[in-house]
Length: 186
Image (cartoon, rainbow, N blue to C red; front, side, top):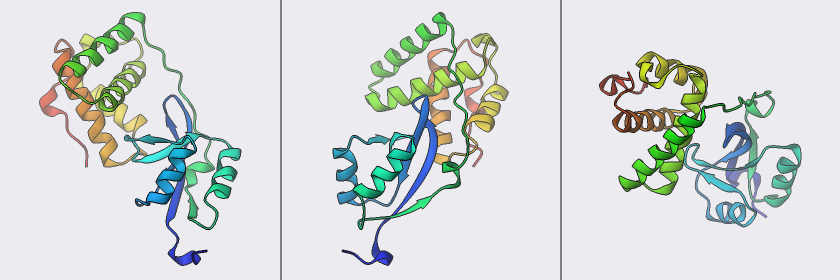
């Protein structure tokens, strides 16, 4: 058994990911922990740079048993917060557009994980703007989306979002977003 002060630290967070509340685990690379999580059906999130599973009290207690004496756990304040899951509502036409956008990215040789991430970002963005026609989109819509939806995330998340929207602009030049003015606020 390792002493407590040399154990790897795992930060536990509650996040909205894949349209649901997830228990997110973030830690410095540790092969044993990574393999243990993988074998126990945790999934990797490139967006959050961490491992996740469905959020519930049982998941946390099972995790503590699974990694007992192998890691320290730090609970992020988000574990205690009541995060709201916003329902995704987009029109059939926009769903089709997102599917064609994914095919566009595939044609540009993007990795399937990147295609999924970018498609999810665009789906979330279209849901966020609600009934506003895509041709009327502006950089202000993007800025508000980032502020309202991604403010609690880190710089890498915002860059991913901006890159997804830049690719969407290249795919759908009719929208009013000015790609040149898209930049991270960091």
